[in-house]
Length: 461
Image (cartoon, rainbow, N blue to C red; front, side, top):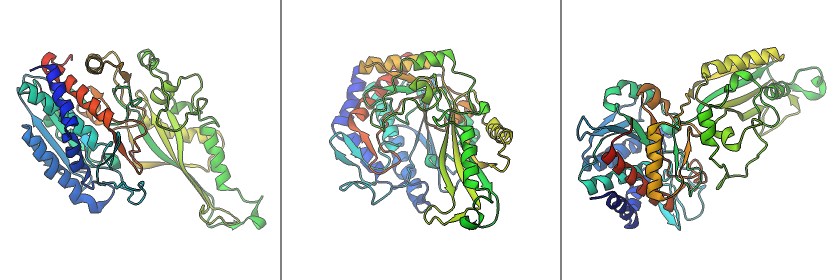
């Protein structure tokens, strides 16, 4: 009975094909949360797959209805070995984005896990079925080696994360006592690079809003009216240019953070952003004077997701009556998103764009969260992972993307430690989504090591 024994069990679970078998079964559930016809599959993933699996590990399971979105249920489970022991909460989501059948490469299909070399293809293989399956496999390895975990575990699995997690915050509020724990340890998102274990403590927040210019009813012939009628597309283009410059720098003070805390800046100084596995980085884009890591993990960005003027599919020789754009803020902890739209409205009025309407998008924002690099749970996780892998582990105070992490930090009131088991090039929202086998294998090992350490040493908080 030893730490090495638990890690060996986790490794053998992978090497003997048992992990592939479990993940194959889970990928086969067509859990597209945006497709109402998939509601039975979404529920079956919990009731037919995860409940029996967790019950076999000694968990008490309960499937809960979603108070905000019918057909997107939740699973809560708990294994209480001793109320006096520390308790961790782990989270995952069994839903996926749309499968995009017919767009995958020849020989691949979204609802079948297919191995080609080190890549395991299938919808949800990386986001997020593979990631929470790794964590459950590691828990099983520790339990098998020690005969117990040495701590209590609570589980929350949702089936609507890809739709913005409707109902998650309400469930956390309603089930606060059942979900109460000392720390969240979960997995989602990408590693910094495929070869470097990564830990992050939160995520940037997100807020969407629309800009719209509506000047008249119907289009008017540009030969007869050009030079006489204001063009809403031109007005909106200049309005956007007043918000963010030609190199992506935000020009509205109310949208920018006050600065980057010293502890965060120090942590990000060790992070090298290479873009490995993704598109080539534009190094002179974004806020000037910041490193690449500070731009994506320590600062806020304003993006234009869509711009419509006239009919893009059939342009006519007419001045269009209106123009519309969907705008998108990624923001960091310490910023209050309730101030963003008033700041935009005030800025546009100040610059003479009174025709531009600023329209909030319903349920369009998630708050930003961040964990201090000096937090003792961070230090324990980094030490444990480096002991297991022998690799320098990257720590990000927050992910560049967005997770519903505020449900755990703000409602359940716990620190959050995320340990991703994927990488940036996994195509998780596109055809050919895949899990990297070496990352999954290492993920099983390092999570088994961490869970062993938690049972042996307890939580450092």
